[in-house]
Amino acid sequence: MQQQSLKQISVQKLTQKAQITRGTFYLHYKDKLDFLEQTEQQVIDEWFATAKATVITPQGEPTTGFALGPALRYVDEHHQILLVLLHPQFTQFQPRLLQRFERELTAYGRQLPAPAGDEPPVDVQAAFLATAFTGLVHHWLNDNRRYRPEFLARTFCQLLAPETTPLAAWFAPVGVDSFANAEKA
Figure 1 (tube, rainbow, N blue to C red):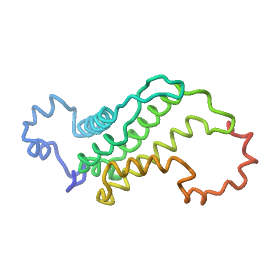
Figure 2 (cartoon, one colour; figure 1 turned 90 degrees about the vertical axis):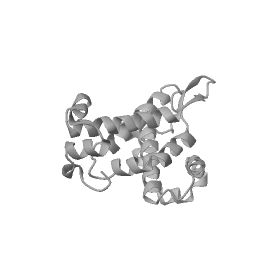
Figure 3 (cartoon, helix red, strand yellow; figure 1 turned 180 degrees about the horizontal axis):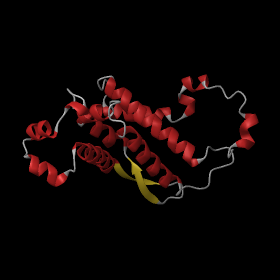
Figure 4 (cartoon, one colour; figure 1 turned 120 degrees about the vertical axis):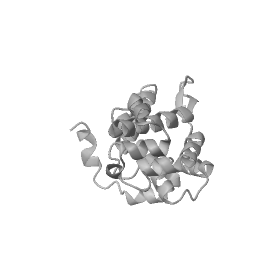
């Protein structure tokens, strides 16, 4: 899939490359689209399983979190398949990945105290964090993984604190007061 588009790859080419028979292929997959869908889901599931961690909520309760170090080491180790799946020809992988991140973040958000009046809604926070993290991973992969996974994990954590992100000032909060009461519109 690194060398040819999915349309150019036949089941015969897949089975030859994997050194399996066509019969074995069809025991597990309906067709090559089913193969792709299951492969995408397997990568996402493995990534989240690798990154599964116990974190403590502000109330002192243990819950499931996402360990950045192991998550980024997984990306580093599986960079070839992730680069392929993040390519625009694979239209379902990135939305499926974002959906998983948002679902996990939202589930974590339900365990937190209700947001303060000026705090962004949980769904907005989840969408922002999911997009920011996957975007950073995509950039890192396209930049040939220039940084070590541990460095990138620390950097991502630093970026979450607005006072350490001077570029955030580019997004000037001009005119936001007029929208304060229209959040559910």
